[in-house]
Length: 362
Ligand code: GN1
Ligand code: MG
Image 1 (cartoon, rainbow, N blue to C red):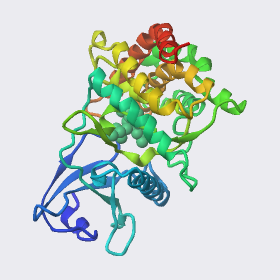
Image 2: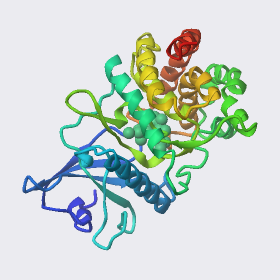
Image 3: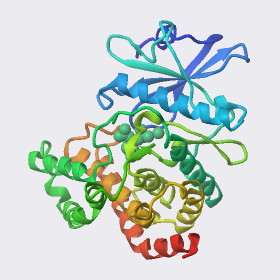
Image 4: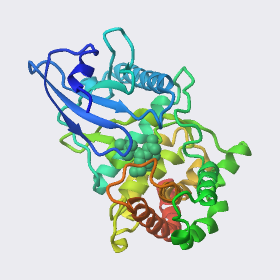
């Protein structure tokens, strides 16, 4: 392990570092909580950027800076207080860069948000606040004056994700394809329908907007009253379909089980969470959403467990090169859990449509 104190010495921090310890449960980057003294000095989060996945660190950090600066200005204009808890703040290096490269790894530092919590599961009440918060996040970024890059090209492009799966199957590098044939068949059956977003986009019926693209429920910080303080994990903020944010929240929050639940009976689509989030989201996002976007929100709720199943299975077939795993068939267990969630969400589509109509009074 690198000497983290040495890394930190390159950043323009206030106070003196007293402790550095691991933080969070992300599957991609490594994060550390950095405690400082005296108490008035902020604490920080140090992150090692996974640059095999985010290959263009300059673009990544520039997006991050543009997004957080834009949101900060919006919050200031609204007269909000306590802004350091409502938007992430990047700390530059002593030579005014947005990250530090140690010859091998890329590092960045953010201000740690105090008295805030993230959750792996939320109640309907919290989901309602989360819905409002993500709608607001998209609304605030709708007039960002700069063009953001795609930090991971084709990140939520379903056609591309299926192509990656097909390539993995054709190569079968570690001999796992035979074992997963039935799953592959199930995924294949749905492939055409699931690529609807890409077709609508080509037909000019579905816009790309600035989205978060990783709206896992644990990427949101709540205050002591359950109100959303801010959205974190901004690496994937980029142009996408709004389905990304709606769908990935449902995938994580409206799952009655775990993302990697071994007991599939635990995994079901939770309509109460769907309703609460949708209500909040439509309140803040309705102003800019088109009918095509609104009508396809139930599709988005099925697309994301599907896409995640495709991505986990691709990684399993490739020999686990992308996601961090805790045991040998972890990616297969994840795939099965996402597939079960997909089936449950598919069954709930009529109820989802009915609820959206009810919200819109139609
Ligand atoms: C990754 O880093 P983390 O755990 O928030 C992934 C998401 C997946 C998610 C699955 C850059 O997110 O796209 O949905 O794992 N992020 C990237 O849990 O691939
Ligand atoms: Mg995360």
